[in-house]
Length: 344
Length: 116
Image 1 (cartoon, rainbow over the protein chains, first blue to last red):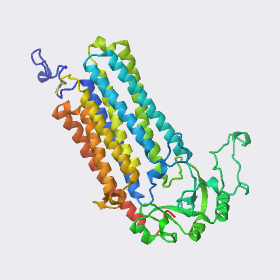
Image 2: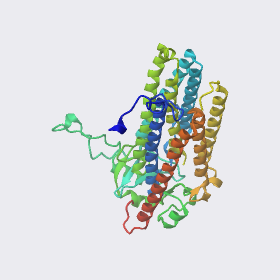
Image 3: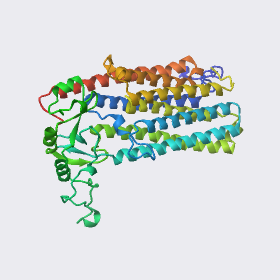
Image 4: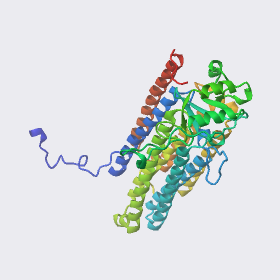
């Protein structure tokens, strides 16, 4: 027992609190610890994405074909511009955040409030842009069909330009199924929305349009080029690192083997290609978007505190630094998501 | 270590400039995809992807060092955070990518077709 008894003289400076061995306050240190663990969570997601991509390296969708939308620019393929804009917005909101921290060091309440406000606006615009991006991704653009073997077939014309299902599907053929809704069910039965066209309509439409061709998931590399059969006779349609376009005969043969029409994206399948692609997109950008959203919420709380003069009374604006760390971290994660989802 | 509380708005705007320029370069390369970079492989990856990854790490450095003020923290804190993350991620990525590539080869060389 003797060894555990503490006397007044041993209660010294080291364990008594108020000591900062790393030169950072308790709150900041804990924020750093949180950021380290959260960084590892995000790296886990991105590494899992890399794993799945390497696993399906020959059939992974091309990001610059998927994300081509820009507000008010319909029908124009503008790869990457919108994500680039989102990246700028987030970087800029990081700048206003660090300006708020800087103003906090000088105890300028008004300036801190102003910059915090700009940061919140930037964050909201980013989350809104993310929602718009999701909407386009879920809605899809061209549509595709899925074969019995689970691969996606897309349609191009004889110049290699993508063709949407609505441009050729033969709607004179009746659809074999009617959407089951609650009102028509015998019990509490309903189903997810059916695609606009049936497989039969797509197949018939393909037959009556002789200029159409099927594009498969496989990317053109020297290795796949030697292995893939039934490629189009026109070599201009099969350029390197693009998806293979099949010959008309092979296209018809492949199309006969389809079972589903796929429009847009959900967690089961997507018109862009590999099923995991949409899953990872929803999961990683969704988790990041959730971080941005909670960051905005935290920023709003701190913003109100600044307005109320809480930190004036404390005589320190360290709280701004702590939320700033979190906000910059969210920006940091986006830099990596941007690279690995849209660029690489 | 302890912040000298000098206004460093000039540096903030400079870092913003650097990050913007790098992002612009990335987007430009991503849209153009110059064949000389895109088709040249070095160490199992094409040159364009290497450039993207290096530029990303460059941006990450500026965000952490300037915006998160890592340059002002003690050496111990800096290493505890940065080294932990870097070495764990390198390890994780190495294992997962090697394994992913192995599974790809198994699928490719198998006698059973799995995606057709």
